Image (cartoon, rainbow, N blue to C red; front, side, top):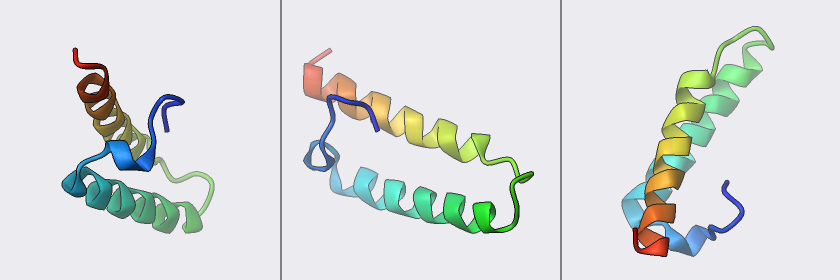
Length: 58
């Protein structure tokens, strides 16, 4: 998570999405180290970026 963000900076929907995405990453990670989770990481980064923009008022 970005350094400037707290969990309270996310909306309810974003919190739910983050929890689900992290669960999916964990599930894929259990399949082995060769499984690609970069698509899920990009989704998390987009949510974090959106919350950071909202927090900073940009």
